Image 1 (cartoon, rainbow, N blue to C red):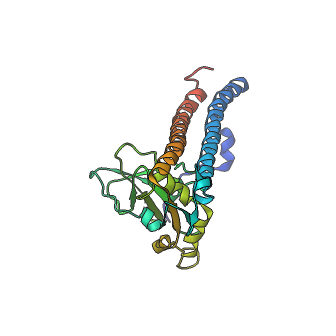
Image 2 (cartoon, rainbow, N blue to C red):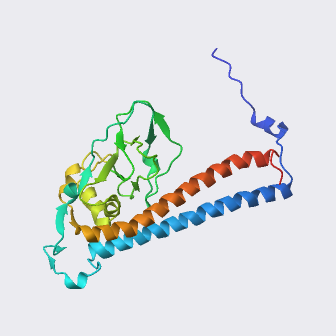
Image 3 (cartoon, rainbow, N blue to C red):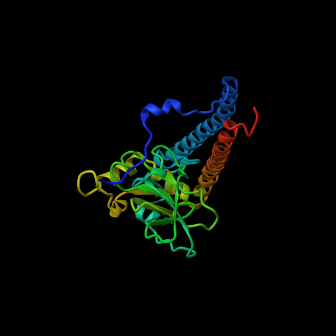
Amino acid sequence: MGATVEHARVGDFHKIPIPVPPLKVQTKIGGILSAYDDLIENNRRRIALLEEAARLLYREWFVHFRFPGHEHVKITEGAPEGWERLPASEAFEVNPKTPRNDEGIIRYFPMAALSETGMVIGRGPMEEREKSTSVRFRNGDTLLARITPCLENGKTGYVQMLEDGEIACGSTEFIVLRQRRVSSYYVYLTARQHDFRENAIRSMIGSSGRQRVQPNCFDRYFVAVPPELLAKLFDEAVGEMFDQVGNLDQQNQKLSQARDLLLPRLMNGEIAV
């Protein structure tokens, strides 16, 4: 009765020959691959340092208000004179509508693509979809997890890996934050602040294990919007850091692809070592 399914017996495994390069060749292959891994890891460390520098500058200027010329500016009602104190929902666009610019395939990024510690958004493996009712976003947007425990764990990312003009989509559990009265850099760095995340966490409702952030929580979180000249100085400083992060991430993608293509060719002897 029932279908016959062919299978291998564990006892037969010792009879299956597996070609293995000589130990000397294996060592050389390991050295080649390690060189790629070392370059990738070095770039990751540089990315972490650049992001930390951007966060420190943000906190210095917009949390502690030690911006250039602060010695001559009074603090009134929670912000320096000449600044605006606005709810995040006014300073940012929250879940803006992003129409597709064509009817072709659109790239999809899952929750797993967001990092708990840094801005870089993972690129693989990804899906491509012909139609999508998912959250849509573009370069310069910040993605924030809205569901527990992803938000508590810090899942947040800065979109800068798309092609020019490309629209992508992602998990319906993303909140998209977009620049309005402040720059995209300011938006992301605000979203990485502990008190910003705590404000969102306090708004969560839903059943245990499936609680979600309520969008109106951004009405209760206030940010200090600087004058245009100071905002420009900040954007020039951190914008260069963000660009370097994007370039280093792109290098890592190419290094990873090259390493993965090289491995089978080294192992089968197609490339001599």
